[in-house]
Length: 193
Picture 1 (spheres, rainbow, N blue to C red):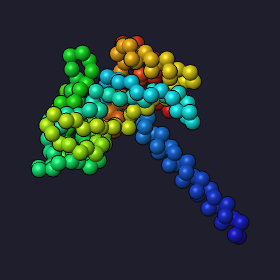
Picture 2 (cartoon, one colour):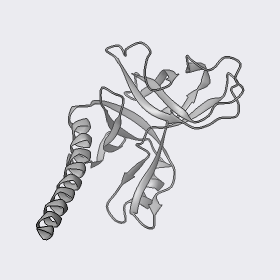
Picture 3 (cartoon, rainbow, N blue to C red):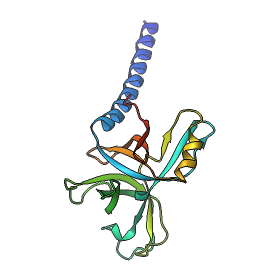
């Protein structure tokens, strides 16, 4: 009887682990499939992780949010701890989406209009809240892994010409990278599964 319980318990644990992994993959695929697309301009950083292989580490114009755009900065505060932030993006004439407003916290605020998208991120701590300062924001889309040997060449090309990514953003503001673009040319597309 004890051996049978052990087998049943092991199967239950295995099914729970498989279910958890499937849930993570399905959630990511749902964002890629159903999320609204935004084109973000890329700023190059560092292309290699010795343990994980080639990737392009990405920074975006929307990763530096001017404090003047943040509607709910704490009154009288001189610094700001790391916090959740929602950045409202709007498509510009050149096709790229840029920050037009932001609010600290993960909820509240006015719903995005038809031409706007809210994207959730995390702002880094800052020691100065002067009106002309910026908040450094990460969105969880700062790395894009590439086939072996591709990272360095792309990183060098990013310093010479304009690159972008197409990100899918779901209704809750969670973003996933869909495509890496060299100008108008598709370089890599992320598979759904």
